[in-house]
Image (cartoon, rainbow, N blue to C red; front, side, top):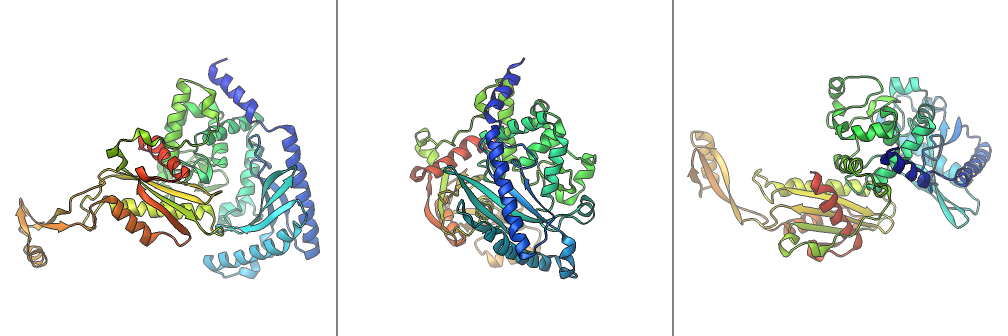
Length: 484
């Protein structure tokens, strides 16, 4: 038995859910079904099925201690479609949102009237759903209750899903029916590895989004087992995985796949790349950790540890000025953390783009890299930047037209009477708007920060304030920059 196999078996004994956990989830799901069915009959609401989806549901790929339940309620679209005939996509989306909000408020939330259901409330980025906590033996078990249209695979293949979650039950059935118990345990090992690498889900610390549960399940499906996957993981960016056996060229010809770093095609929908949102950074960091693990296998690679705060004493006075932090608080609980995350990534991308180049495309502050990290439990959000040249000259020579381009030369001279001739071009000394990155950063953030954020600090690394900001600095320096 090799050491890698020994480690896998040892880790598995620690992450397999216990029988009492599975029983507890089963009992909660059974009670939820009963309560929802009772109120549905009172309101004369018809549904096709109520089923636990996700890793704790029919997939059975959850880790020990993972009690979160995703309960899906199917609706027959045939009973609703005639109300929306002739609607545009946008109009249909708006009307379906109203329908789901009504059902969530009048049916689902009011069915959860028992004292052991705490804080039932609506949540949604796009698709309204109900989230609630089940209080049991001083434990809080999070439950998401989601409405969807119960479509056939034939319908999805021909027309695509109607809502964003209509594929999800079919994902569950695919994993249930196509992975063996041994493979489901391999999924557990893979999830544990991604979590230990801080590269899992939509709260991934490395990159915008990490590997999700379904992508982990499909990786084991495509490669067969975790040994094969780990041995081939470093080739994943060059190896599209397609259930429909299309060539790499055929997949590259699909327009909406062309900018995707990884390709893992959804067996339920040939037009969907499950890996489209997975960050290149998350992949590269995990690839490096897998290479290290295979060289020197240790249980440590699967241990969940908090991200450490960066040790500021390791930076000298000059290096402090290469790192800048924006520390923020979210002041609106109504906005989902994924929306906040996306807003900050968009803001940081704009800062990078305009910070690297002047409006004339002349180099500005050099190479800029960033990372976003947040802790939504305490509403702290941070962006940290690496800046190649934090202080730059007050002016620069801007290139004008070639000296033989008479029309453009005359126009340039009229606009820039202080021009000089250098080589084959006209040039002019141009004053910069900003000469230090901190001033530029402070003004840009203050002008463009979304209204739901409060700015707590904008500074170089020497004046960093919060624990979460120091963790953000650690992520950029130790988990991102070495792999760019």
